[in-house]
Image 1 (tube, helix red, strand yellow):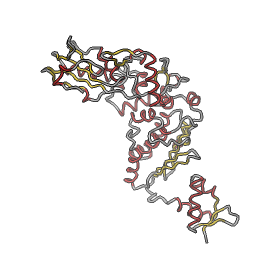
Image 2: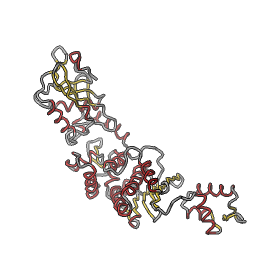
Image 3: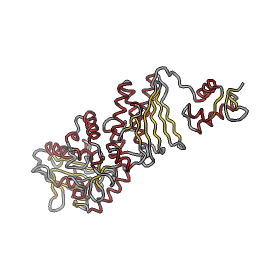
Image 4: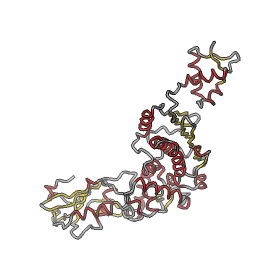
Length: 434
C-alpha cells in the first residue's frame, strides 16, 4: 500500500492517514479505523505528520510497542469497537526516515460486518472516509449498511415482534459456559451479557435503533411462547430422552449432547453432534420445521422435516456460526467428510443421507453398532422383507423400511425387471417369483 522508503512523497488521502501519536494513542485513530473499514480500507501511520506543504514526515516515537499493545487491547474490546477486522501481521513496527513508526493496515469490512462502529450504537459511532477526513454517518447511511448486512445474514436480522425478555436466561448461561470452555482466553468471557449477545449476533439493532433478538438468537435462546409465535409449527424433539421436546436450539443441542456423550465414545458423539448442528443450520424455519434425533441399538437418526435447503452453505449462517463458536460445528464445510472418516475407522457402514422433497424430510442415518459389518443394499432389504412376509404391499414396504414413495416404486420396478419378484393376480401385493 505504501513504499516507506518514499514516505515524503505521500500525503493524506482517502486511504492514508498520519497520526503524530507522540503523546500516546490518539482517540481520533478509532474514528479513522471505523471510516476506513466502512469505506475501502486504508493505512494508518503512527509517528508520522503531514507537513504544511502536504508531505509525510516521520517524527520520534517514544514507545511504538506500547502503542501496538494499546491498539490490540482496544480493538479486541467489543464494548469499544464493534468488530476487530485485523490480523496480527496488519499491525507492524517499521522504519521510515530513520524513525520507527507503527503501520496499521485496516481492511475493508465485508457487508455482513458493517456498520463498523464505536461505542454502544451504530447510529452515533459509525464513520466513513471522505477525501482526507472522517465524518460521522447519517442515520440513513447506517440504515443502508444494515440492510446490506441483513441480506448477507438473513437470520441475523432483528425480529421486531420479539423483545430481549423473550430470551431464556438459563439457555444463555449454558451457552456462555460452553463458550468459556471452548475459548478460555477470549475477551468475550469478561464482557457484559448484552455485549456478548451482540458479538454473536443473537441480538441486533432495528432501523430505529432499538435492540431485538435476531432470528438466530431467538431460535438459539428463545422461550417457547415466543418461538411458537414467530416460528409456528417448530418442533425440536429429542427421542434420546423418551421424546422430550426442547424449547430452543441451545437446549435441544445440549440435551442431545449429554445423552450421546454418555452412550458413545467421544469422537462418535462429536460426529453425531455435528450432524445435529447441520440439521439445525440448514432447516427452513419459515416452513413449520420439525427436527428430531432418535436412536436404536443399530443406528442414530437425525431427521429434519421441513423444506429441503438445496444450498451448499447453511440457510442460517448466524445460527451455524453460534455453534461453531462453541466448537460444535466444523466451520469449514468438511464436517461430513470427518464423520465419514470416523465411521470408516470404526469399521462401520458409511453414514447415509437421504432426502425426499415431496415428503419434505431429510434423514441422516449413522450406524453405531459393530454388529453391522456390511449394510444390506436396499434391494436386499426388500427381498428379505418379502421373504419373511410372503406377500407385501408397496405401502407396507414404504412404512417398514422407512422409504419414500419414489424409492419404493423404483426398487420394486428394478426387482420386477430382474425377475426376482412378481405381483399377485390382483396386482396389489408383491411376492418372490417362483
